[in-house]
Length: 372
Image (cartoon, rainbow, N blue to C red; front, side, top):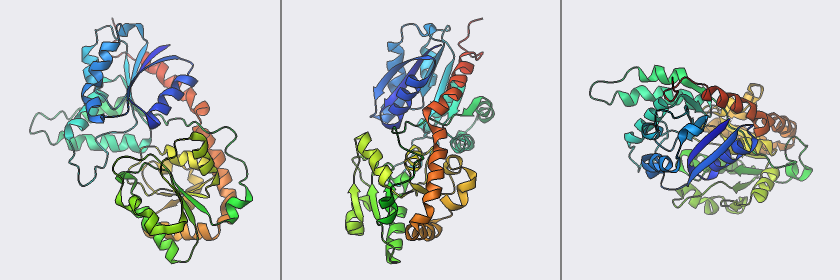
């Protein structure tokens, strides 16, 4: 098939997703993109930009968009002969937990709803994301003073599915036994999440301080994408943790980044928002033992047999399990190897068959764009 993909925020995980899908799919996927900045303006205006770039939408079998744009606006501007539309939700403005200094603009949540309604197929990157989205829809609609469209949630549930994204792993990484020094030196903890409040760095720093007070040695590498505004806990991390911090800042080189993951013994998340968990999948595949909250998407990406060892129930449980893993790190090497192998199921080569089937099904959808 010939598919047009519209990516209004072409950077980071969005960029990797688009390029990997294009490279591995058996379908022919053309990309139209905008740089990853000004997300609010992307949601307002990307549809108008993309519509001007597409002379003949009917030449495609399917148009696939991601969620930082108004697909409803794009659909309204297309001729009746347009092909079916699909949308992939990496994130949602309905469910994103805004920091206390930011007020939520409900217009963007409503844009997510109308984009999903305009699509013939709606895909979410995890079951927990789909569930959170559908649970949030009625709450926003209740804010309407009258004429509430109570049919919306049922309509969206009927045409929405879950498609876990694929991951691009470094060649030759994963599944092999870790090198002995990794498990004998003070263990290296990896924190490779975005430097934003929704990843809850405050709780992570508190856990590290509590472990250090117990006299348990460790090292920590702070990786992940950084932004202009740095959360206070991360800004003070070097002063708080001293020589235990061996790296502080975004690592732009993929090779160097994967080397850090290979050196890591544990990866920890304290996130309050995580729609899939690409950073965790990468680290676990690289050989890191995970300690993750027992919520969000994490129970989906960690096989059930490993939940008791890898998921925690609140900060006290995190501190207890983290101190134990650090103190007996060599005892956990076998589990890390098993989990590394399990993550192979998220490789793009393993995931692409599901995507190709979903794309073909969406193209055959009897949507509004189908001509009689």
